[in-house]
Every structure is written in C-alpha cells, then in structure tokens.
Length: 274
Image: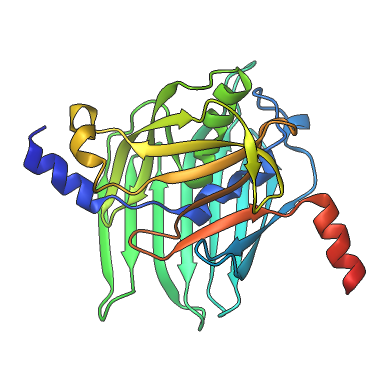
C-alpha cells in the first residue's frame, strides 16, 4: 500500500460507539458459546458527553437465543428523541470456540423516526450497504466484500477482546478485522492493546481495565497516529471482564459519546428516589 492510498483510508475511517456497546449482555459469558453463557438479565448504560459527563441518553441491551445461535440486540435512545438499533446475528460454535458473526445491522434514526444512517453486512455473501441521510440528499453505497477470518462488526468485536483478556493476554496486541461504513462499506484490520494494569475509572466508580482499539495500517501506523481516532473501552476485572463502557464517535464523523454501565447499586438507588 502506498502512502497516498494509506492516508486516504485513514481519512475515511470512522468508529461506531453505540454499536460497540451492544456487547453488554454477554459481558459475563464464558469463552464457550452456550445457552447458559448467554442467559442472564438485560443490562443498561448511561450515554454521556465525554467532556462534561452530562447524560444525554440511555442504552439497553439483551441476548435472544435462536436455533443454532443468538442475536445481540441493543436499543439506544437519546433525550432529543434520536435513537438507534443494532442487531448482530451469531452462529453457535463447537466447544470453546467463539461464535461466528453471520449478519450485522445498525440503523440510526432521526427525532422524527426517519432513517439517519444505516450499515448492513451479510458475512455469508459479503454483501454490504451503507445509507447516509445526514445531508441534503440520500447517499446509498453498496459493495460485495471479501470477508477475512476474525471479522466482526459493532458490539460483536468485544467477544474476541474479552476472550483474550480472560486468557490473561494483557499488554499485547491481537489482530482482528472489523466492518464499518466509512462512509462506504469497508473492512479494516484493527489492533487491540490493553493497559498494563487496572485503575479506578471515575465515571464507572470502580476498578476497570482500559483497552485501546485502533486500525492497523502496518508500517503506516507511524503516520496514522496523528489522523486516526482511537476507541477506548473499559472492562471490569472483578466481574469476569464485563464490558462496562467506552468512548468514541457515535458513527462515522458523528459526535463523540461515552457509554457507562449502570452498576447494580446505582440502579437500586435510582429506583428508591422515584
């Protein structure tokens, strides 16, 4: 890849934070994909502005078991009446292997209920589509992509991250691939790196391990550092490496937001004040 082509790819890259958060219903799951691993109550997040900590919305997610797999389902609602919904269809695996992502969809809605943006990928056929209604005219871009091994999208990328965190692989980077609309359908190589130790994450109010996810451009990483946005996510080492929040752009070139998992004691306190 030439420098010009690499820089073009960097300029096109965006991250979808709300999609990443859908993983919360599998945060206590074992590496093996089984019904028992995915059977537990839904979980909730507060959506905050990173610079002020002001709440701007709420997120709620669950896992629905299906024949031969499961569906990660998330709903994110904002106080200005915008919303988005993500679904990630997973096929069950054998033994301790991770499930496979087979279909992904993330749709963002305007306050009036019309579609703002949509990203969709069928990993079996490689068919992908990106819809953008944020401008004066609708933009629809589609492509048939070659799907590498270890390709994930949105929230499902947390599954392999949790897998290697639970294996104790801290301080190392693991290569993965992720689909995104940036703004056309693309699959990026990404690297995942963890901080060497745990620290209290103030918004969460407890100890958490920070993970950084960034695109991997190989030797161009030296140049990419100044141009490519980073996604940070936090996992609770005292709760089975449960995903407890992240900070990134809501969608490609969208506003930055922070998701923070609602802890059990915080939810109980909120209920008592109602």
